[in-house]
Length: 305
Image (cartoon, rainbow, N blue to C red; front, side):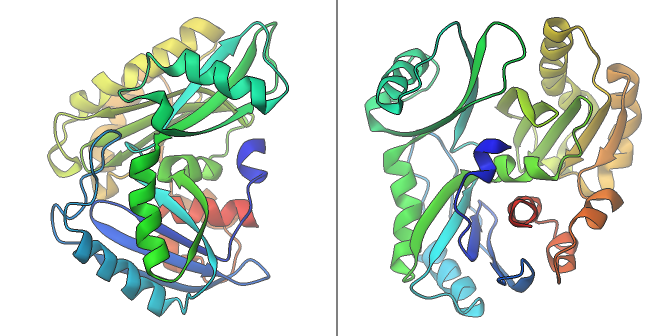
């Protein structure tokens, strides 16, 4: 959370995903001045960490321009939230870690080069050192292919805006967790699952995988098979249990998944955007984002408050 809170917070945020482009404008007092969303034609964006994302660039550009017009956004900095598959996130352990970014970045690039499916020379990389839990030093690193990030930056710049921050939707949504105890977060977006374990503002594990089916066709066992390795890794390494699970992206299908997940993981399952989140999102007009299930934009808004 220290990493996210240290970022600048432009007055505009855009979430550009495979199904739609959504955006919000914040007031100086933290309220939501405007919210807009426009659906994309199927296949206009195919999120990928390695390949071209913009299949129908004209359609996506038109959607971005439409949302920006509704937000009255022009010649301003904006935050851009991308699909989770575009940004790879890692929790890395070191016995020693340089304080200087000039020394730390080459070390991280060297360590991550076998973990990413692209050349580390063509990347944008950001990192933060987490509070130490033992003798090891843990670093959270986010990395994306520069040429792909540039595709999204082109969309924003072509709409007469400047890119201030680029992140993934899941990383923004993590701010919505009430993580005083070990919390397992699962976010389903299309056929993509992002799973994370957070406790006391510290990221203990993060995984982004492709599901065998999209959310509407997903079966509870399919989801459990993908979630269980992250939960088991945390419990085996830290000798403590997951206390709660927060799920986003299943909508009204969540009750079908709750019982088998609770039985296997021995923890209560809650929707991410539940009453607790609604109570914490005190900004004026936040209900528009809540009703539209905009967890990424909501998380970004919550960090602004």
